[in-house]
Length: 168
Image 1: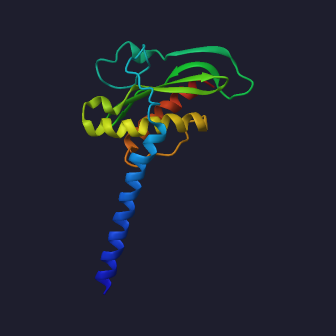
Image 2: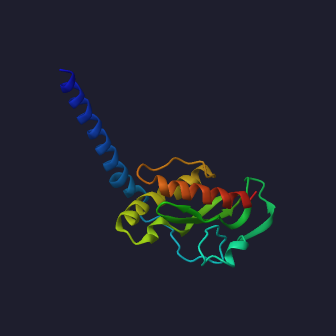
């Protein structure tokens, strides 16, 4: 009898996880589809990776900012690039634009989907627009992780926080 209840409970849990995954990656993507602002150029961006290709850019932080802080926001207006964060699936780096003291845009300079693997590209295509939208709404790097994209989340939030630290 105990085995029967364990089996029924296990089936229920697997079903709930399946429904959650379906909603997250199909239904929720329809709301944010078309809002991806992925950019693959690294305009002299700051980097902290240990690869030999990151020599001169590693020493300079990119920030084109104004010297005054907006009276309605907490950040100085300008464009700031976060540090490159190495993750298990590749490097992540973001650039944030501050306007009116608030986050107006976030774009990916480096993304885990650049590894060329279709699964990484699929995950990032779903997660990146959500992370960008949540960062704009929260006006910070304090956002919720998307289920199944925690590696991207780690890199995104660390790089975003580094960029926002430059804007204060």
